[in-house]
Length: 318
Image 1 (cartoon, rainbow, N blue to C red):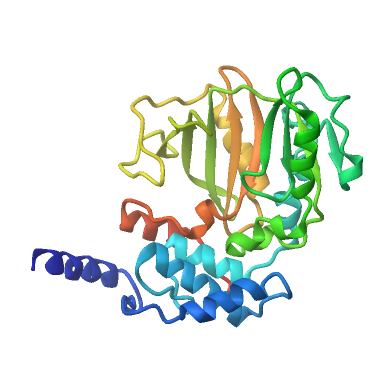
Image 2 (cartoon, rainbow, N blue to C red; image 1 turned 90 degrees about the vertical axis):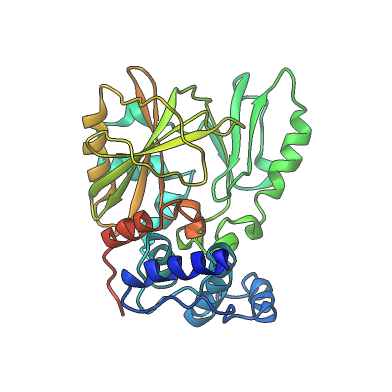
């Protein structure tokens, strides 16, 4: 009985801030429909209705209620709306790890020293040559997620790495197919070699139409001890966690204001994008632009914060 009362209380809270009540009944997309679309997406482009159905099924599995694409309210709902209805071709340029630095330099031509430029880019399996690379480097797909390797030539089998990397050129490994993140769609596959950058933490600005609203600091990135905190632009830590556990310190670089200005320039013209940087004590590099944090499918610990972020995204509805 207590659990039922809690569920009712949560639904009441949700509905107070929405123009239409959430639909927490059974998922309106059947498993059979989802399975069909999951196979079809590799064969042809999904229509907007099909994309909406596909994402609605994924959303329900994560949040326990049906995705509202008519009157989306939360940040996560609006990210999924953008996947279906917002297709700015510049997103593809930004998402392509082989070309991202060109986008940065187009908008910020004096920032060349802060861009991590590829050591080499390979478009075909038989082009992949690792012998000429430095002793340590990163090998990664330009349109994948998790498709990367930290290479030490003295320890690693280069032939095995080339074989693995060749599979990353398969168009079906495009990250678009995981959750229809539209920025990845249509990127020409490539394998990118980059220098390894040792950094203290990542600092990432959630920007809306060219205005940073909050920022995120991630420590111990890509390790079992990864942690992250969210902050107001003033530096006040927010009592929220999102996928990662929180940590106790509050690093803020001396060049923070410079990063804010860079974020404004790079995010201009997009309803939302997260601008990510690698940060050291007295240096920084551009990392990437992220349009769909956790694919819009990972709950935030505070529902009202999800709503607050959602209010920052202004949708141009068709």
